[in-house]
Image 1 (spheres, helix red, strand yellow):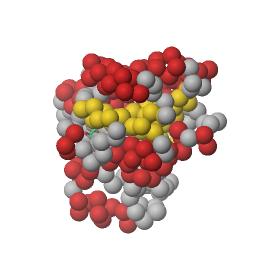
Image 2 (tube, protein in one colour; image 1 turned 180 degrees about the vertical axis):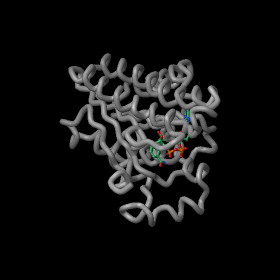
Image 3 (cartoon, helix red, strand yellow; image 1 turned 60 degrees about the vertical axis):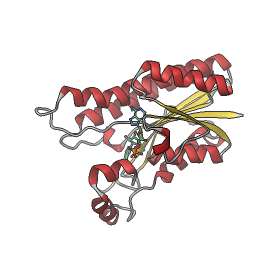
Image 4 (cartoon, protein in one colour; image 1 turned 90 degrees about the vertical axis):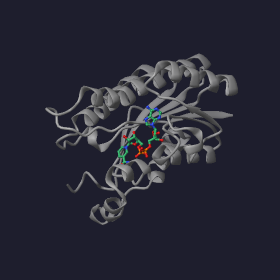
Length: 238
Ligand SMILES: NC(=O)c1ccc[n+]([C@@H]2O[C@H](COP(=O)([O-])OP(=O)(O)OC[C@H]3O[C@@H](n4cnc5c(N)ncnc54)[C@H](O)[C@@H]3O)[C@@H](O)[C@H]2O)c1
């Protein structure tokens, strides 16, 4: 039996990833702040929590270990966006974004890595970064900075954990049609956006889930410390 934790796995990229990993034979725990009855994907264990809160994450790991006794894969997917100019940005907005992206990813990765080291059979950690980690746009500093930190932590953790056969990688999605993007931009903007993108469509959550499926599989057995861009050419033509 293989087990995976997907943060933010109730919908969007995380939901497609949880579904993909279940199809690949994983028992999947979804950690998400949405109430379970609002989740489109629930996995086989649903833990409602805020991954920025250490106690919440510890309770989730305890539930996973009680049920299955091991963690084979962690997908750090949950994030909270931020878009504001430096001179206007409220401190609370920065704390919210970094609380989820930085602290949430750090808490989950530390607890998962400890379990993988304890069991001694290797494992996989995949974090969902963003093309915004490498490209600037006014108002994106807090989000972009957090995603750039995810890339830096990914490479560093990969070097720390390689001797335990724990592979650590990240994915940079381009623009993906998810519930979160539709809430931010509205249906009309999202439906019109695809034709302006290089491959003629927005990404689907499954495009990213496929990359996660690859990275945690034996086909990627020699891949660690990699930042894999899956953006349909978004960053080629800008
Ligand atoms: N959609 C895109 O265009 C795009 C592009 C690049 C990167 N990404 C990244 O992909 C990931 C998923 O994005 P999405 O578009 O699917 O988002 P989404 O808003 O559709 O889904 C995010 C999920 O995370 C959950 N979540 C948010 N904060 C949480 C917290 N503190 N604790 C637990 N759960 C929490 C939400 O409840 C939701 O279910 C994010 O890391 C995002 O930064 C998305």
